[in-house]
Image (cartoon, rainbow, N blue to C red):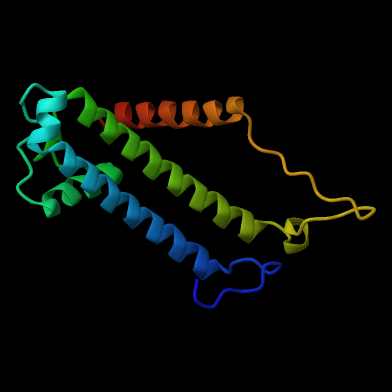
Length: 159
């Protein structure tokens, strides 16, 4: 960010939301470009024996970004839809990454608003460095499983 605070102060609320919005828009654009690349003749011959991976074919990059925005927001108007396994797989990945980004943003909002700021600052005792613990594969798989189950339940509820 342009007006970065010092490292010990962290980002303020507006910076966090701007970063989340930029990340969301970047996901839409990146997946739109991936969908458009899957729409080329090269990708169709490589993956689908000359058949289109989407129905109807994208006529411009804007249509691919439009489809991407509909997919990540889980709107899905149905005017463009993936018909091949690979394009369907990328659509699923986009939905999961979009939901994951929203969950992370919501978690940050709740944590920062309802936690004492002194509790968020790292504590050092006896001048020992803090140990950083990375999430294990089990934690990551559990989170993905929860997201997938939630999406399935929401899709059943919307039917």
